[in-house]
Structure formats: structure tokens, C-alpha cells
Amino acid sequence: MKKMMRWLTMVAATVLLASCCKTVDESAWQQKMKQAAELGTVQYTVQKVVSNNDESWKIFGDRKILFSFKAVIKAGIDMEKFDPKSVRVSENKRKGTKKVSLELPQPKIFTYNIRPEDVKLLYSEVSLLRTEYSNKERDEIVAKGLWELKTDKELTAMILRDARLNAESFVEMLLRRNGFTNVEITFKEED
Image (cartoon, rainbow, N blue to C red):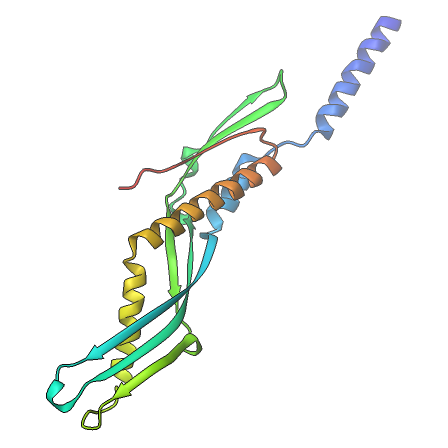
């Protein structure tokens, strides 16, 4: 009888402990990641100076202009491209550990934003026989500066590297909070 009571007590304790333990619902955190749409992981504010020296009508004089502007650049992971099928979960019940491996999309730059109030005229010189720069010409000069930012390979590489590192840290923290002890994150190869 005592053996039977010990056995029932052990079974009840096991059931009680099992019901108290937190279980991880893989589909819930996968859905949260997918619903994030854009996981913004880095934001840079870049100061840029752009100029124009119009000497096309040198006989009548020249005109020069110099602008400074701030651009806010946001980058991260496009989670709409995240494939939940890339997730591999394994559990070692004996050790009480859970491992997850997943593949994230490559980071990308989401936006380059220049607010009108962040564009400053630093210098303007126009010869007597020349006309001032029109608003359209001024906008084209600032647009040229923005294009230079967008095509700056060194700046783009730095921003994407930081976006990748921050995304990796954030997703690892999220998964560890969801009960995973081992987290392996890779990034999808670029097409």
C-alpha cells in the first residue's frame, strides 16, 4: 500500500510539474515575427553638403550655391519575406534545452527622409547679369545630394551591417525570452 501511495504521489507530482512548466508555442512567435512587416533595427541621421557652380554663361558671370541638409535613413529586415518554413526547432528533454535555427531575409534600407526644415542654404553668389536659382533648380541640387547618399556604397554597407547585427541581437533576445536556450540565426543569400 505504501509503495502504491508513493507511486501515485510521484505521478501526481510529475503531472503537476508538467502542467506548471511554460511551453513554447512556436507558431505564436513565428506569427509575431511575420506580422512585424518591417523590423526597423537602425536609424542614421546623416549631414550632407551639396553645391552647384554654374559657369555655363561665364561671359555674363557665374552663380554658386551651397546647401546643407540632414537625411534620416532607416534600415532593417523586411519580415514579409521571412519564411516560417526556414525555422527548425529541436528539444533535448533530458537536458531541458530547446534549440532553434532560422533564416532571416537580408537587411535593406527602408527610407531616406529629408524634411524641408532640415535643408539649409549656406551660401549663394549670383553675378549681376545672372538670375537667382529657381526653386526647381534648388530642389534638383538637393535631389542630387540625396542621390549621392543613396549611391554611397561605403555608407550603405555600414548601415546594412549595423541593421544585420541589430536584427540578429533582437531576434535572439526574442527567441530566448520564448524559452529557447540555443539560438542559431543565418541570413538568406542575396538573389
